[in-house]
Image (cartoon, rainbow, N blue to C red):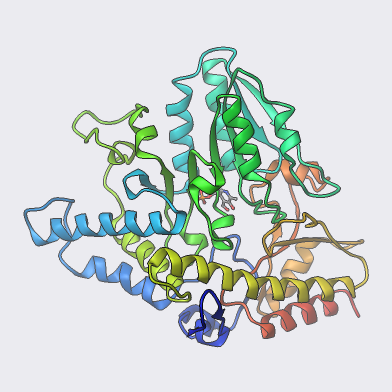
Length: 407
Ligand SMILES: Cc1ncc(COP(=O)(O)O)c(C=O)c1O
């Protein structure tokens, strides 16, 4: 990557692509919001952890120390990515698993009649765990509704359902279906004024935007490394002092210290090594004195690259007959959701796949937004971008769709 002056990073997509062995298979990948491809360095870090002596975390043997150092390094890396305290970084199998665990833990502090706010813009992983947890303790659920016409979730929509009984607001930093980035900071300020905690789903956002837990106003920030070039695991960041207040269910012999208290069983050390490698890879695309600085500049450069391609795709789709793009929010990631007049998005998905273009159709577990958009549970065609997508991929996508539509 070419480093420019100050905050300017020249983005060389060909140089980036050379790091991704999976691209040799020839697919054009517009499936980034489902999961990204992985740089060689990440795969090597995973393998490297496994081929060296490795044991359960400890300080006596080399294998124990290796596991310990992998965990400490991964917490630091995630902390740099999210602007968080490494002492409040919790690893888990997935964002879904972590959210179920935290919902159960937080709900144990709720009383009947307390309220939890969820949004109709959110992935089901930031909805269902809260509904189930609320029901178990007799808490009420309040829905903040997004506007299907604009694809926006406003702070007013959240304000309308807050009350002095609100204990938690669960909201996404970016919709994996529409790309919408709600005004999380404004929502968090309102929630905090009402005395509620704020649980932010950054799974989609973390792949596209520089994030900072305090700037967002998030009490809990969750994401999944496999969406940003890393391996399949999940991570939560929170202030250690807040985590100290919570009492998760745990085994008797397992440690009660934070953040380990929340990590049930043995951590996947190899995946944590891969997570650090993914964050280091991203940082390597940026410039600055610290890894945090490099990550912020890298994510801005990736965002600029992806936004340029997104505009190309939008212009191309606008020129095709019968295509409607539902991603309209003013603030959004480069994720487009499209429908076709008289054509099934699943047929477009299959047609493109035969031509080596991966742009899936579905609702992608974003069940509530899909239903609210009138798309039912089957959804639409999602076109997502990733750091390795280039203009040639966009040509193939637009050419494939033109062929599908017979133009
Ligand atoms: C916005 C969003 N939230 C949550 C999830 C669930 O993440 P995980 O697969 O780590 O459970 C996803 C996965 O697609 C997502 O896109």
